[in-house]
View 1 (cartoon, rainbow, N blue to C red):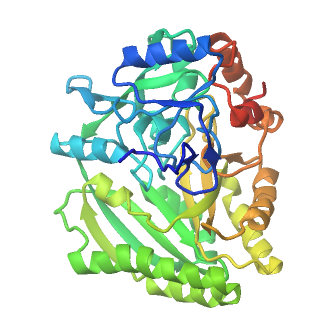
View 2: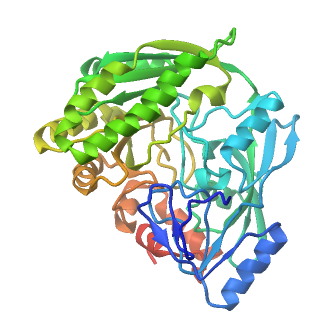
Amino acid sequence: MSSTASGKNGTWRNWGGNVAARPAREVAPASVEELRAAVRRAAEDGLRVKAVGTGHSFTSIAATDGVMVRPDLLTGIRRIDRDAMTVTVEAGTPLKRLNLALAREGLSLTNMGDIMEQTVSGATSTGTHGTGRESASIAAQIRGLELVTADGSVLTCSESENPEVFAAARIGLGALGIVTAITFAVEPVFLLTAREEPMPLEKVLAEFDQLWAENEHFEFYWFPHTTSTNTKRNNRSAGPEQPVGGLAGWIEDELLSNGVFQVANWVGRAVPATVPAIARLSSRALSARTYTDIPYKVFTSPRRVRFVEMEYAVPRAALADTLRELKAMVDRSGLRVSFPVEVRTAPADDIALSTASGRDSAYVAVHMFRGTPYQRYFTAAERIFTAHEGRPHWGKVHTGDAEYFAGVYPRFGEFTALRDRLDPQRLFQNDYLRRVLGS
């Protein structure tokens, strides 16, 4: 089975079901050489080129009517360097396979997002992140990149080699070339203790700075139509390992978070008036728990209920105001929102188009169940986020354009100038990149 969500008769669809594309042809190169040939052939045929991973983006960032490159065969670990403490992996490797392979070698990434279905290149190119006081997005853990550029050549970059490309290409949106391999910093595997507990929204907001400062990884979920949140703190631990118990874990992670939640969303979609009552039940169903395990088993969780998502990064200092405005908007609007709002943080980093570029950030993510109209909710939320100079996640629904991004990203011009140099003919262009980067 292909790694990408796909449809019949040559139509490609993303995981969220809200984007479709009909490429002129698909290629699945088995080597960097084959990819270079495919890129040169596309240019000769006057076709644009786009690499697509598992389709986990809700934007049309991977859509193309030209050549769609599938990285299904460009997978696996090239090498582990224990002296430098790095791992080099092929671009199409799913994060899940990377995490499992590293754990077998007694190694781990420092931080990760909450799902691991995506390919390493798809996740990093869109700026996928978890939550962290000191540790940043997956892309911020990159130490080297290899990419095939528009003329079919292979470019390698790091802090010491082609540093101006490295500064941008770690979160390159697919605009600078096709990533073929990534070198990540790794460390010896460690244990994390997770503490999950409900907490009133106002208490979380009032004490947010303290909760952020006292925990290596703090996040919380607020349930709209309620004043309740579920908080999660992950901190390094000396052990011993105490994984989530089999039955208890299944009840929390599968039955409540996926099974019952799926049914609740079906009910909510059919009868929107039931949503606030369901939200109150959901917020009460999750009880406090503590467990200790290796990082990927703590950071990530299964997400089987399909949804559509918008997420913005606002300056961390603006979080409480942003959330209070969001709550007031939902309460006022008559909207029925069945999915919790997720809040995470990241420290400032030095990647040109990272949502945390140059500023300490808080992420606010709003979701709607797949198939439910989301435009009114997302439009109202986006108005609040942009009033705080928010920066949207590149792989999640937003209406931002190049003019807006030039105002909220100090290094936006640096990125577009590099794109002009590496892809002057816009071989890697699509409608999404035309909108967000300009033509």
